[in-house]
Amino acid sequence: MILLSSEVSADDDGVSAESLWIELKGESKSVVFAQLVGGEWQDESPIYETTNAMTSLAMGTAPSGEKLVVWTEKKRLKTELMYMTASELDGLLVWSDALPLHNKGHENFSASVVYDPEGIAWLFWASTTENYSDIVLRKFDGSWGDVERVHSNNTVPDIKPSASITELGEVLVEWVSYDFKVGGYADRARRYTGAPGALDRASKILVDKVIPSDVQLPPNMYTDALALVHFPTNQKIQSVLYKQGFSSN
Image (cartoon, rainbow, N blue to C red; front, side, top):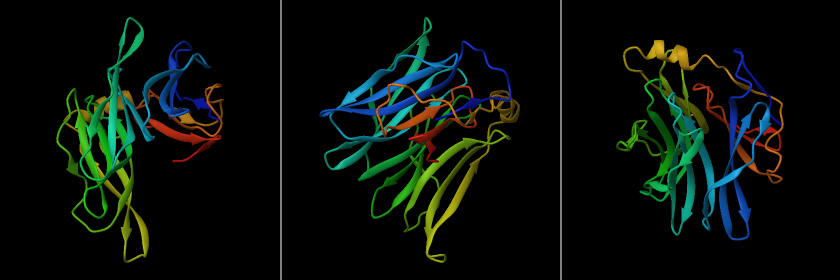
C-alpha cells in the first residue's frame, strides 16, 4: 500500500501518481500503465506487448510533461534496453512506438531515469560489455546522446544505479561497486553539476515533495506484481518500486 502526501496542496483533479507493471497472460507479456487522479486509480491500459521476458521498469517526466519509459527485455542471447516516450495531446497521453535503446554488450539491466531542470533525461543502467558490469549513462533531449561510463575503468561489478536531482539542481547517481578491501559491495556516487541557472529552476521543479506512504495500489493489479510508482510532479523522487505493499528501493 502507498500513501501520497505533499508539502504543497495539489489540485484534486490532477495526476498525483502513475504506476507501471508487467502483466503476464500466457506467452504474452504487457507493460501496463495507470494514473491516480483525484485519489482514484483510473482504468489501466497496456502500452506495450511482447513474448519476450521483461523487467527493470524505469520512468521519468520532464518539466514540460513529456514522459520516458525504459525497461529491460530479453532477446535471444542478449538483454536489451527498450524505451517509449509519451506526450499529451488534447488531454490524452499519446505513446510512441517501442524502440531499442541499447543492445551492445551481453546484459543491460537496472535502469534509472531522472529529468534535470533543463528538461534533459539522464538514464543510468548497468551494462556488461566484457566480464563485469559498469554503470553507464545516456542522455535524451529528443534524441539520444552517446553512451558513457560513469566511473573510472575497473575490473569489479558495478550495479544498482539510482538517479535523483539534488537541491542544487545537480544530477546525482548512486550505485554499489564491489570493493576487495571490504570484501563486499560499497556505496559509490557521482554528481553532475547543472547548467548556469539550474539552481533557480531546480527550486521550482522540486517544490512538490511527494512522499510515498500508505494508499492502495491500482485495484486490478495481479497478486505479487512488482509495481513502479511514479510521481510526475516531483523531479526529486521520480519513482519507487513496490511489491505487496513494501518499497524495494
